Length: 176
Image (cartoon, rainbow, N blue to C red):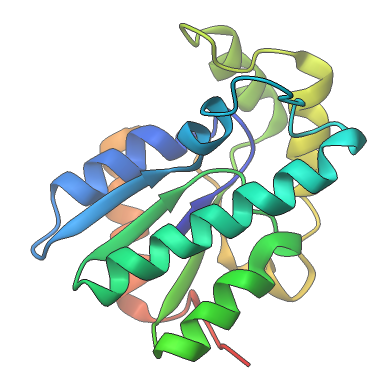
């Protein structure tokens, strides 16, 4: 499962709860770790200059997902994985006969900004960047039905909604 959405949508909290409460061996793969592992030459991933870096990071993430999945683990990918990053995931899914579900947590912009202000540590709080990334998930086209408005939901309610969505099969992507 790819669990995505704008910064401060609750991805990391929800992904952790989903993985910890799974009935089968499950990995919570946080994409932030891959970005934070770049110690020299890091470019903020939302900047145009980060295109090459982002392509490399997505390739590393996809390879890790494939390795865990082939090893018998379910994987919850937690990160900003817009529709523009789906082709490599779908290619591995087709190659390894894996199922991929795509769930977008999408609270309203004001809720997202409020949550971002309350974040601790090195988490992104830049209003302009968050607003831009929120906008990138506002227009999902054919994937619009993969979005869940989580603005009025707490973490436990969001987990329940994501589990329901996953179980329904409505959020599955078809690999080419």
